[in-house]
Length: 276
Image (cartoon, rainbow, N blue to C red; front, side, top):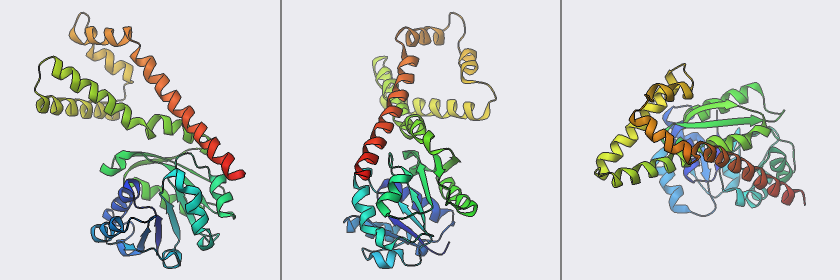
C-alpha cells in the first residue's frame, strides 16, 4: 500500500500502527496520522513509529488508498463531516467505531464508499486481539485481504456479517474486562487466604495463560476440560459447587447478553441521529 491515513491517535490507533509497522506490512513513512488536537500525542507517534503526523487534511488524504477511523464514537459525526470533502469513492474506509454502522458512515460522508467495520479489543496492545470484520458490497477481495492482514498484525481476525458485530462486541469486544474482573476476584481471594500479593499475581496470570492455552490446543470442549480437573470429593469440586450455588455461569451469560443489547441500543441511537 502506498499510503494509509489514520484519523485518531488513541490507544487502538497506536496498537494498529505499531502492529502494522512492526510487521512491515506498511512502512511508517507511508502512514499519515492526525487527531482532534493532541499535538503531543502526534509527536510521540511520529517519533516512536516513524509515521507522518499533521493537521493538514489535504496532505493526509491526498493519494491515500485507505483510511482508518479510530476516533471515539461520540466524535464520529463531527470527524466524518470534517473529512468528507477529502474522501474519494475508491478510498477504503476502515472503521473501529463501536456502534457506528456502515450505513451511518456513508450517510455522514454523503457518498457510497467501500467500508469495513472492525471490532478489535484492547488486547491489540499486546498483539492478542480478537477482531471481527464486516464489509459492504463495494469492498474488493484484494481490500478484504489487506484489512485481514492489518488486523492479524495485532492478533486474530475473521469476517462476520455486520448484524453479528453487536454479539461480537458483547462477547470479545468487552471480553477482556470480564477476564480482568475474574482476576480481581482471584486476587482478593488470595489475600483473604493468606497469600502474598505479588506471588499470588504470578500464579493467577500463569493459571489464566495455561487455561487459555489448553482451550486453544486441546480438541476437548471447555466442559470436558473442567470435569477432568474436578475430582469427586476434591478441592476443585468444592470450589465449583460454590460457583454453581451462586449462579456465576448464569451471571456471565447474562453479562454478555446485556453487553450485546447495549451495543445494539448504542448503534440504533447513533443511526437515528444520523438519519435525522
